[in-house]
Image 1 (tube, rainbow, N blue to C red):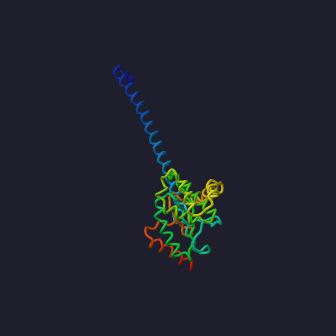
Image 2: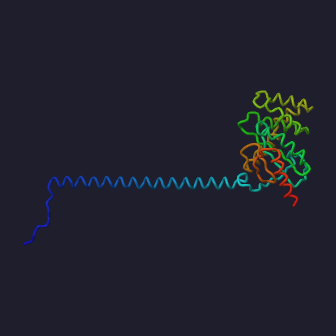
Image 3: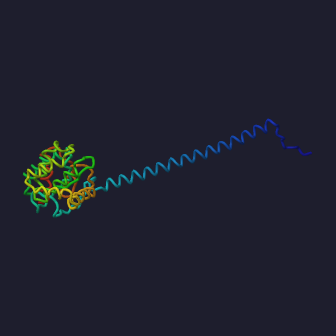
Length: 248
């Protein structure tokens, strides 16, 4: 006689079985959600890693960020002091309204005085947007340059920075400087708003951006961006070392 091995479930056992089945389904859903969250987090971390890596590559590839040499052609329109044929070139990207640029102004003047026969100093405009009169001041200097008085206007502007920097009537102040420099005021007023002057400043600014300039003053010595020296002696020493290398 065969023994019946089947077991008929009681109502209580059936309820317990259904409860376990529901619990298993719930656990499976939770497991899937957890797996999905993990995949999302891993993907986010990987994406962030690629973004950071890309930013590091961009920063490290910037000429201004890793000491690489930037190719700086010197144009006829550039404002140059010192020996125009020197093998050592110092380029400054500057903003007339920048307080730090005003601090470096006398240091540059002394550098040109002491080493002018051995270096070529080039001034380029890099007016910062946060300075309300920076672009106007650059145009005033360029307009004076149209009459052969760029450096004279350059000096007067820096020496009197505190008088016009936050002044809503800065243009009238610059006209006053132009008058003191015995410029033709009609020509000065026309040139300050001319397309040619604006194009010159824009060209300087774009060349600075392409070199990685993001602050003023920024100095490039023979195409290599240097950290802003803290003293005149430090500045002079850096340039003299470059002159020595050029002479070898």
